[in-house]
Length: 228
Image 1 (cartoon, rainbow, N blue to C red):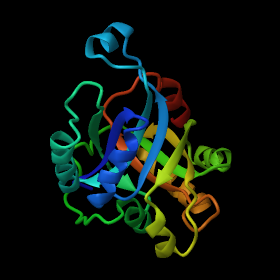
Image 2 (cartoon, helix red, strand yellow; image 1 turned 180 degrees about the horizontal axis):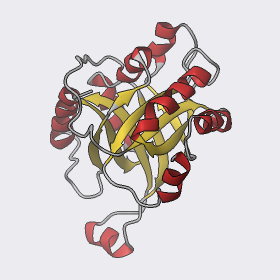
Image 3 (spheres, rainbow, N blue to C red; image 1 turned 180 degrees about the vertical axis):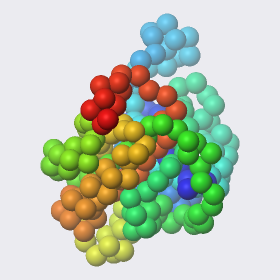
């Protein structure tokens, strides 16, 4: 799948509201936000006259064309290049759980499938599962039956999903959990299918998932041995 990316935005918690508003105006209406803290040293903060703020990390599925439009506005109107404003980067997506999930995640963006990603030959994949709260353990159990080695769970808050309620015919909860699972590429489809069969959009978990190419790993030797 080409021209489809996860756009990751790291900015302070208050400014994240403005960023999400911009993304929605450009058609990227569905985002998932997690929170943390920056790690800049006090010397760097003092040099730029900055304070240590809580950080927001926004995950948004975008087409390349959408990203180019957003990038221009970030540079011209949101001063993204000014130190302390934030950073934005994109990661190519290698697969999506299904057409319904693709429509949900893209929001109002137009997308035409092109050639396969240039990173299709990577050995590992990062599967990202986004689900309602309270279902992570059962989803990880289903993933382990498909040879997943385990996962990492992060609390997140969804935004811009009002249109999905009418589209799918049921209410979409805002409070979410994101599960990161790194696996060998030959297990990717089996794991994603297990998650979708057990916890897809038509279930109470209302999970969506996609995968990202991983170019290199460390610490996967024991998992590889178990898969063999």
